[in-house]
Length: 252
Image 1 (cartoon, rainbow, N blue to C red):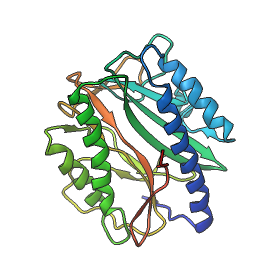
Image 2 (image 1 turned 90 degrees about the vertical axis):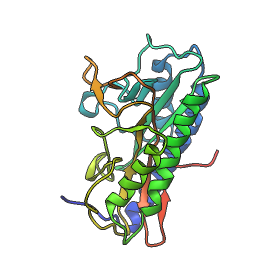
Image 3 (image 1 turned 60 degrees about the vertical axis):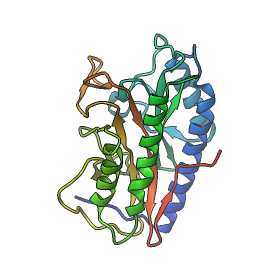
Image 4 (image 1 turned 135 degrees about the vertical axis):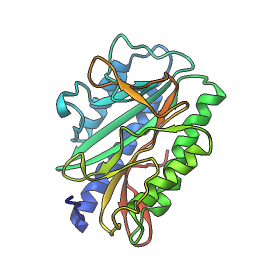
């Protein structure tokens, strides 16, 4: 396993990539409303990314046809944008996006409610988001990778939620997916030691029901096997001696 430690120059490029991506996701939230197609969200998202002279990380990646993964309700990840998929009041939608800035990637995801959503859906979104922050308490030099995984898992499971196991976080840099893999479910070993300069995409994917998933016939869209709601929260995180720096989170 080849895990890269980034130089100061690389970190600054990734910091700018993250700032751009965080801004795009904040602005895209305004497009999430009843009656809007997931194709529209993707189109606006791509335009925003390119307006910063960035390239969408996902467009064409492994053949993916969109710039934003737009996943609705029971869709966990990799929802393909479509003019036929129209957001409705009460839906929840996960927007997963990446940008390439001067050769360096950033990757982040948010789950938003469409109009008025149920208390159960709002709780799932908030618990998933908070589990990320529980995990990154261990994202600093000297900790071990799976301390992040275990903290994410333990927090979600307190609420009876299923933490997706077939999909994991990852290292990130000049490639969208680098070593190491970052599971969100409990691990028996401690995993590798963390060092300053590592960059990780940490991304809890959580279901209101069980953790089992299946892939639809489009070979991309992953849904919960029991059709329960799913939420996703992700940021690109820099490991330092003092603690984590969240590169893709921009204050609104």
